[in-house]
Image 1 (tube, rainbow, N blue to C red):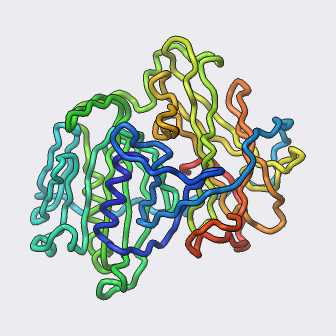
Image 2: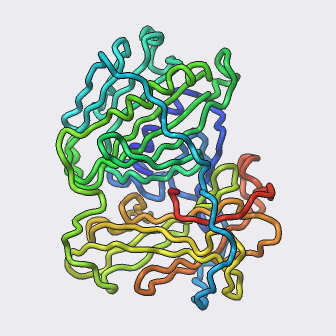
Image 3: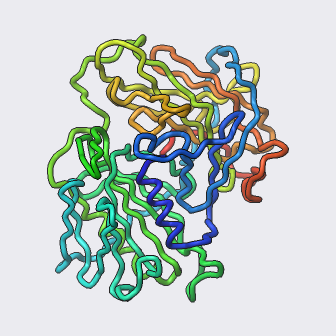
Length: 420
């Protein structure tokens, strides 16, 4: 998790108080609980749990520590291509922007437009703002029925958020983004019982690589803009969702930046300059129906270099045979500079945020007829990790009821690189 994710989590908590989330995700570590850390240096480490739906569950997962032997390369599965790991979603709706005002954040290299009559509430730290519609202008931000939060942070734009419906897109300015939506989840009417959130969404926008200095902390590297959408009623969500999407679509940079993936003119990294890392961590999302495996690339030695790496995930049985899972084997690509973007180990935890963070998602992983799996991650050049496959939580692990089991819903089992 990084500082942006932490703020979005706090904003969700403030907006919903004792919220009940539509989707629940949990990040697991083999053999021990995730340690919760804080501070700008450790922002983005595996010691921080991100649950943007405002529900966090931590659990220990028992498992063997040893690496299993590398199995022979399996024959690719003959099943049909995988369906997307996220449901298809139409492009965001927008509204006319004639007469809109302009907000500029010079330090964050950001400009966006917003409707007249909307109130802007800067955060005391000066690194984020909240916007509320005219009907909520007389309320505190915490009491607003709808809110848009905008923040710039030195973190990679692909973060730990895989519980909702995630889609890729590009702003009119050309910046790539991920949109994660979880709402509306309540019918029209008054505030849902227990202050349950009625709508939530977030844009995570690739803002390029540059240096910033805020609150005495200088940060150089990839940045992103996160725009959060919060509604306490379904009627507010329906009324203001298109306006919020339009605010996000108007976001532009004040000055050009370098690519988040680093300096592609550098010499290519040699195979002995890096290694694959799995921090013995994985996650369950979407009511435990989605299993997410994540890892990174660690810098080892040598001069600065650039690395573009295609990774393949093979889902196998104990004998090394490919399981009949759509999309098996799955692929994903990461790219960045070494040593700058290499995965680091700080104070007992891996820093997972960055250009080399790789992820695979396996949906409907607990379908009947699938044996216990082994996951084999292979990179260009032959680097390989062999990881135990997902298993239902064992005795003694306290999880919300929605997370306690993964049900066979009769839907196809599929694996793919994440995000979709």
